[in-house]
Image (cartoon, rainbow, N blue to C red; front, side, top):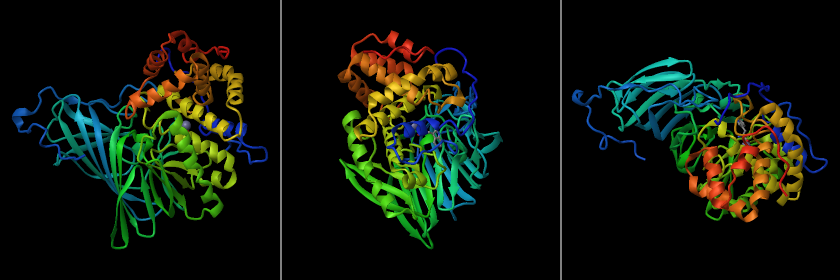
Length: 502
Ligand code: TRP
Ligand code: ZN
């Protein structure tokens, strides 16, 4: 967040994803179905590295960790006083909807002496909680779960919290989200869609992208169902009439990118691109023609690797779920896409699939440090989407940029500066095409060679981390050997849209 208070323009939830629809409308071949947007919207044993905790070593200066991280747009998201390194999540599911039981084991390092700390968590009934194996007290305060360990945690100590819980996954409703988020269900199965703050409806967490962590998942479900989650399938073990599926996400991931699909899904082997295993997970009733269209993923991945560098994870695929129209989300290694798009509008599906895949580099591998930095996600994915749209012959990049430039003054009027969105406009057009336009202007300013060097360096240097707008500005200036302070002041910190360079 740079300067000024967030604007308070209210956009109706559900209209926020209209930008993807806009992109589709602009790009789709004549005659394809138009979407109007109406419906849119490591080891956990740490005792060896931790000092013993007899009463003599209890820190006298321990205090409660804070309830938030000071994010200007989502102040309740995330929690102070610790940094999570790993989530080990185990779920048991009986059906495509209804209650679940789960245990979340969270390994974290204290950044202060903690007498208690918060997790973000909504819904469910908590059945047990421990810190380093000792029973801990828990208390709920809205969507905050306050954990008080039996003994205080020393600053710098690594500690393990286990929370067991059960119940029906709650919907998370937030003005910043394009619709209900969390662990959602349809007749054909469950899927997760948690951006920006819906992970707290799935597991207790430090629900903020500045605290990325490694993940393992264990999902026990009836053997008739299929389960999938982020990362690589590392085990599939029958257990009576059930199957236990285990997944591992071995690169850091933000909580909002969690995916957990359980239900009537088929797995489609899409081969490999370089060393990346392509593996799609699709609703069982998807027809053969639609399944064939998933092959476009391989071309897209090869295309983006050339532009941005090697794909950052071991596997990729599309989760084709009965999600609401417009619910496309870049859940790390397994992008959520609605089955209806794949069935009804292949061109639009193709373009949005490119956008979501590009988030693997920009958003997933390199994540925003604060929600006000969202243009670093959506602007970059949209610019990548434009490049694919051009490459695939739907529409030229130049035309898309001209169109965005024509509309940008309205967007800046309504939504303000690109790098200063309101919580209600996180996923509005200023952050999508309005921010892609900034990248196009940068490209015209520093030239193709420097521009692509900037994109590649951005990814390479910050892969696995969380970043700020300031860091991007500094890197762009460094790599292009150009003073870009005037450029960024005009393009991302102003409401006046400059003419396109050149
Ligand atoms: N990041 C998504 C995209 O660009 C948009 C999005 C944000 C979303 N929050 C969501 C989609 C929640 C589905 C559900 O494509
Ligand atoms: Zn996006």
